[in-house]
Length: 108
Image (cartoon, rainbow, N blue to C red; front, side, top):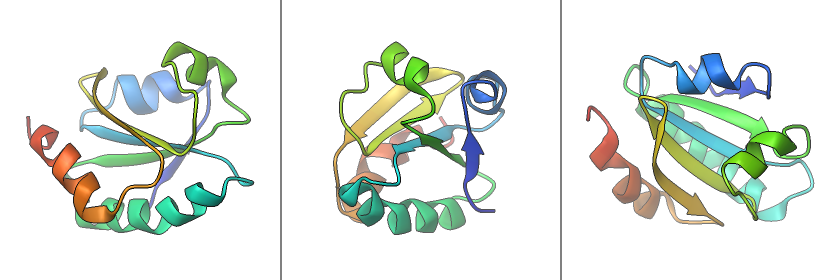
């Protein structure tokens, strides 16, 4: 399963009401560091299939969500469990560091 594109209309259902933990990737087409994070997020979506839902949000099209969650820079990855923010990473991070930050919440 690859990432699901989410917008302000689908955020409630796809993220906050999801049965699985959700990794949300806030990014934009023009963002250089976002392009570096994209392949890592895609790998995680494959490795965590069935355990974590991975969604992508275009920061330019979902400004209300960015304001609600205080996102000031992209890329930002937010890990939700049961609709609650459990972890947040802003900027590029290597895959191993991302796994270390998010793994404690998988299966929590």
